[in-house]
Structure formats: C-alpha cells, structure tokens
Length: 150
Image 1 (tube, helix red, strand yellow):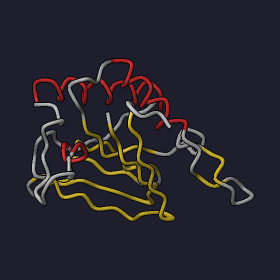
Image 2 (cartoon, helix red, strand yellow):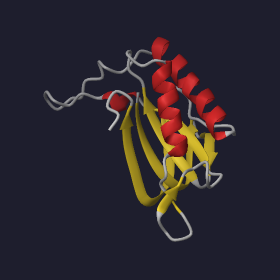
Image 3 (spheres, one colour):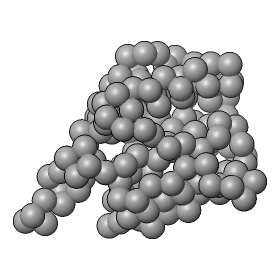
Image 4 (cartoon, one colour):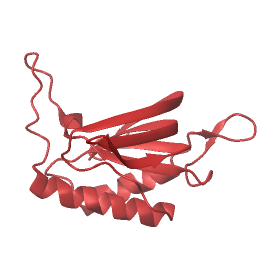
C-alpha cells in the first residue's frame, strides 16, 4: 500500500461537480493498493497516518499528530501511485490492483482509520474521475509505502 500524505488547512474532493468529502485542518491522504497488500498493511498504514507527528506544537515544532490536534483525514483512492516509469514515457500501472482487490482494501483502510482516529473519514469515490482541491499547509508532504517501511 502506498500513500501520499499532505498536511492541509482544508481539502475537498468532487465527483460530477458534487462534493463527496471535505475537511478542514488535517490530512489529505491519497492511497494506492497493490495485490500483495493485506490486513497487516492496512493496520500499519492507518497507525502511521493517525500518529504521524507533522503538526506544530506550541513551540512551533512538528511534534503533534492529526489525532493530537483533533484534525480530520480525507482519503482518496489513486491507482496512479503505483505507476512504473522506468521504461519509456508512458507509465505502466501493472502493479496497481484491479478494483476487485483494491476496493475491499480501500474500505478496510477507511474503517481502520475511523477506528484509529475516532471519527468518520470523508472520502472520494473509488474509480471515479475526481477533482481534488486542497490548501497545502507548510507545505508538508510525506510518501509512505507499507512494503518499504523506512
């Protein structure tokens, strides 16, 4: 499982002109699934996202998590995170899971994040053409992969 996490002042996602999810201060999380991902990846990723200390404390030091600040998380599926660009100029998405595998993993991550954060997680619509709008705060952008736990 691969994610791009952006610390935001606000973010929203629209499908066909309608907002399907929106947050104020918190994290916009773009996530992609590969066939090798399982429940362990979901649990690890959710814990990392919720507890990642990238918000400023009173001293201006990034020492607080989204949970600590009572922030929000907006989750958006994005299969292109598994693009392979080694060969040629047209990315290959062979590593990205098909919807039959990816949708259940996406839904498990939503449930795990809701459990770990203790609040509802707004989302986009899996597989839809989405328009994501955000006000990046910092900017702070973190990339994580459950198969490469650096």
